[in-house]
Length: 112
Length: 113
Image 1: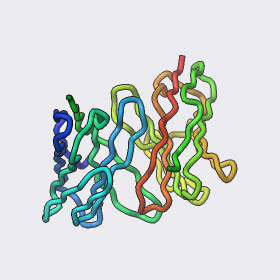
Image 2: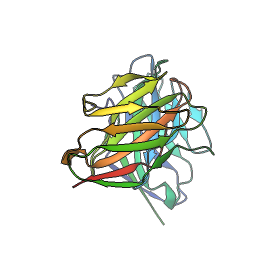
Image 3: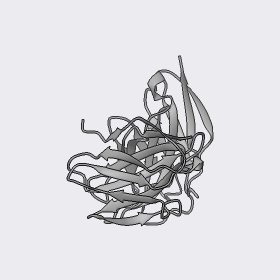
Image 4: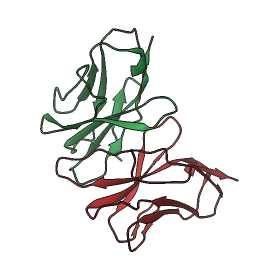
């Protein structure tokens, strides 16, 4: 089973920031926090990942609490195209490559 | 931007038949994965493949399943004798190293009749 807990759904107005929370209270020291999203009928799309520092890229920002037990994905200016299921996943990095264990995620609905 | 390509986009097969799903990973990637998603359910890991051998597999990946990298560009998933419950979206993914994000294709929808 997934080691993360996310709200099943969230709504956001277009142009506003979308803040998606994730709890991972049993995360281990060598586990990274990954975020993916899945737009209807497409494959999961990588968004961002981090270990303990906050991260930002062209898609989003990832804020990880100091105790690493929770994190927030921030889409700074949500658009209609950001409507998707967002998955928070914890994953060990290993040279052999490790599986992504998907949960049910958060369905984000962006409306105009 | 390079992407993972999967063919066909939709495959319809009679129960009991063999099916091969094909994937072209991103060209400089060395790690390859298969996942599946039954309609309305979670994405599930099947298998990971590196250096011409399976590095990890799930309970779903039983003797009916096999993977192969037949040449320098393709990565295939074979289901030997399909069952109705094999109907799902099958996603291929690849990563450059074991430490980097996996990038997914848009999947093959497999329908078993």
